[in-house]
Length: 470
Image 1 (cartoon, helix red, strand yellow):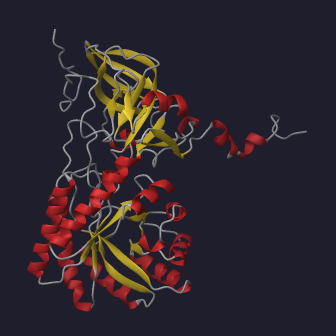
Image 2 (cartoon, helix red, strand yellow; image 1 turned 135 degrees about the vertical axis):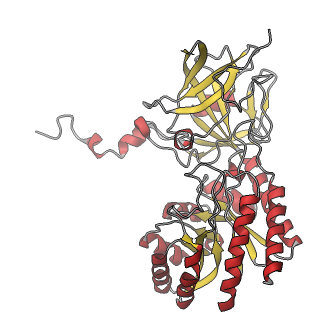
Image 3 (cartoon, one colour; image 1 turned 30 degrees about the horizontal axis):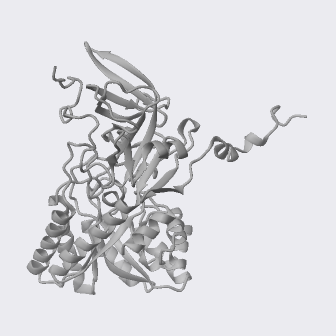
């Protein structure tokens, strides 16, 4: 009998012909199954990785991440050279940052975008030239601004009027003329979750377009500041080029007005390019985005009769997201009857401590058996975490072979971005390690946390059990 889709499945989820299939577009380029059915990443089996490093475990395919970074830079540089200008690419470190990833991105020719003093410290520890760094944030502290100007960060993105004086004072104190951008909200609403759309007016980032001329005048009046251009970021996990194109057109209208009072060498259009998290997702190919954006910049500059600026971008997820896979061990399974139909709950040893995106954004993911293949008919599953929250869901809906059982190893693809970066210690869970795989070898990028690590920060843990009373 041919299996039928479960009526509890969301409309977008299709019953797979093979529940062992490694769907193209979701997994690192190296992902395969061995002759025995094991998932293999970077020529290392998932079984071997789990045995050596435990679970939950983040696995990053180094070759995949490096290749995506290099390809993206090459494509954007080629397309903007085609129209007579150049492109800069900043890797958005907030997606996932470690000293090794900094080295990968710098080696691929990218700059690095950071959003805190901590991320700045990681970038510097990874050997990044400070001049190749951009510093974001809606509430950069005085200490962070002092640190950034002292080490010579390439550009600081001014996010509000109050930051103009703060950055100028820090730059002057450290004997620098600081390059700055001004973040503006183009009013273009990205087709994404409300929390991910960052260019509408009623939110914390940037300033409205109509305030920009006054603030740019204030920036230009500061001798310790050098205004290099506007910045805009319309959101994250965006498919299609239309939103980016409309935002670019609006920014170039403002750019043309501001040119009357001085040169503006650059325009930063941000990032937010989407990736596939499930087989239903159809992200826009990078080359298609680059062509569309180059064409709109060329057309608008010709219409406005202004010079072509250098155009900068800040992708993160599209570089590191698909390179990452998370491994989990199944602890329990539980069939739950819902109006006469069954859904199988599969609980794993991680959850919202290592991937909080489903709880934050309703993000969807896929899942596959990682230590074996199975010929059992697929059943609808919900992969649940171990935390004391009913919303602790890792994968809301997918199909797995019906014989999935405690002890099985599961793999969730496309977890390279915003999973480790948002990880936490809820329920006193140590954060999982991050492992890089390359050419049959595995090494630790970020070590995992033990309970001993967590207790070491608890000052009361060293007190006598009687509370210190004699």
